[in-house]
Length: 163
Image 1 (spheres, rainbow, N blue to C red):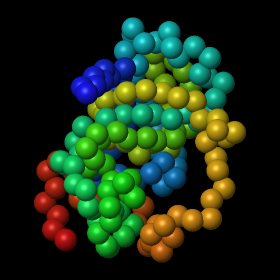
Image 2 (cartoon, rainbow, N blue to C red):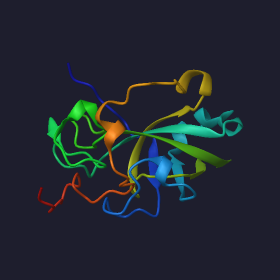
Image 3 (cartoon, helix red, strand yellow):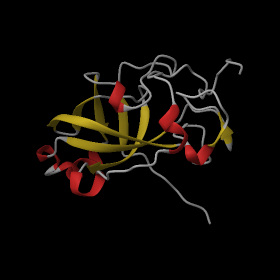
């Protein structure tokens, strides 16, 4: 089966490289950027301004080749890829819940942005607490992690970090 994806826009942020970029929106508080939606997709933004948060779904275009075992950020042990949020995936799809500040035509002003500048946008969905928040008791290996909140570049296409 062959799938095709078409970007619907580009994400722009102050983050130029993976190293030093917050690893999740939770640690990107206040970092602002914009999402430029291509004109042919702009009508789909209607009614979005009523939401405080939105999901950005994007292609991690600068992630290194997929690895099925990785040392994730916030840990020092090798883990199975699918038990992590590492970007070096068979399909390097990223997901970030960002604050929507404004809809200005085909441009979204957003905050709490943890995405690299120029990243291709695949989709936008509204964040709805009734659908998106679940209380949980188990968080696997993550429950025992340390507090690294920024990337060190280990999953960048040009990574030179050794472990």
